[in-house]
Amino acid sequence: KLEERKRMGCFHGIGHAYFRDVAEDKLKLSDICTFGNIYDQKMCIDGVVGSLSDYQNREAAYETCHTLEDTTLLSHCLRAVTNGIVSGMETFFDLYKEDTVKTK
Image (cartoon, rainbow, N blue to C red; front, top):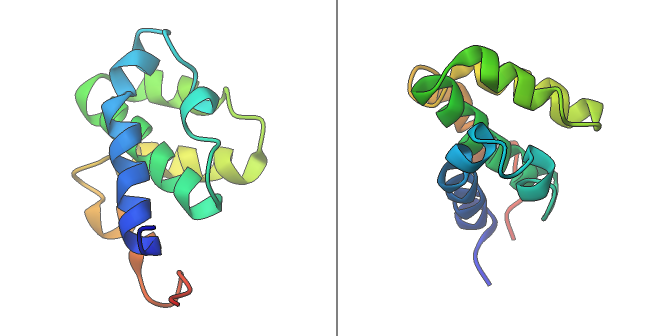
């Protein structure tokens, strides 16, 4: 079992790995990023839409966000599009900070 921060890193990587499938409408965001806890889901969303925003186009990333039904995840997704994967690295990894994640 991975520590929480390392597990979230894996979820981010999963999102990044599948962003092209989402861009090509082979998968929906909810097919990939609705597993694990809320932090895992947010990191997965960051991986997908951050990459989509930076490597494809922002409009497609915004459209992808609007496929989410959960308003908390939708809000997070829209913020991730704005921040992108490169330009928003400080915000992008806020979920790793000590005050956000409970450590065991």
